[in-house]
Image (tube, rainbow, N blue to C red):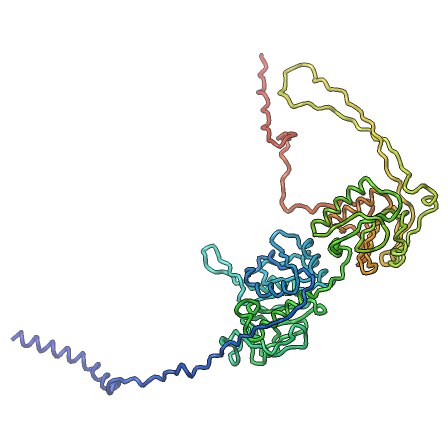
Length: 545
């Protein structure tokens, strides 16, 4: 009886447990599920905009200019990406120079008419910004290009991304002084685009050489720009990812009297994107912008304002040799280093660019040039009566020489070491008598001739003519040395004139940021670079009782 009874109990328990599931299923699921048909889009009905490829055929006149490309600030691009722009520049006769890491901007930039700064990752120094501002103020053209896709990702010690650094962080250090600020955003348009919401089509162009021949252009990733004069603006449906601002968003702007061009997209300059819509024409317009810089050079741009051939001429009839001749030779090498030729020639007439050098009392060939530049030299009566630059002052200099001998091991002796007698040498030093008087420069003031040297830049019959005058031959040699080194930091200058001290002052060297402690007093210093271990003193003797 236990067998059937046990089976009955099991069946009853299973039915009892199953009743809630059976009831719930009967109530909620009244039939089998049949999914409704899903609408499938017809591929043929999808309207994908086909990029319009437009090639530009242009006829340009080759000129002569130099365009400098920045590679010194860890720029986030490779040279082949600029092939389209570089080919347009070459077609216009531009010579391409590159600012590589470690190059001196102060030496590279003065020779250029255009400067391209593209997606930099390293910041610009204050001195670099100052030099670039001088470049632009004197007529150079500056192109600033950013791109939202050219960002830098930094990683922490574990290898995980820790920081997203946009290119605008470094670019704004340079662009802000010109009134242009690149926003750290990207522009997008979900209504009208070139296949992606970030590929915006622009049609709002200002009347400018930058927009010549444009009907529409396509930018594939663009920041918005604040400041300057807008030349290309996005339409009313374009928004900023940073502020969600809609409409009147600038993507290209000019500043500093049209000498600085800011572009917020780099991709359109590269292949194949440069061939879409009117991008190719826009690249050509950018190339025209860079080669049309017309520099109004100042003294600080020496010798880059000269042409290929320069005449070196003396202002007076008296020969000035010695140190002057030596520095003139160094000056020739300075010209050679920038592909210019400095050739000594007799001062007959200005037939090409010229550099006049001489003394204040020998201005035979340049009196007219000095008058036209507002420079007046008045010499004292004593200077006029003396023979030209023939006076001298003689001084006797006594030098005491103490003979030295190689360091030898100490020898135990009760006698003090013998010291050789000092030798006395008497020399006579001759110093040149300076030319005494005053020099007046219209835009700098009046100074004694013996205290300053004159630098003056001007144009005569279409040629650049620089004049360098001094009160002594040594001061003249020193002025030529300063020009060779490109260092006018101690001179009072205007755009066209400069007065430099006859005797340069040694400027203090900036303190080092690294602290080096002084040597310990018990460690003797030696005359050689090798460190000598201190000699241990002998042990103290114990007195005998």
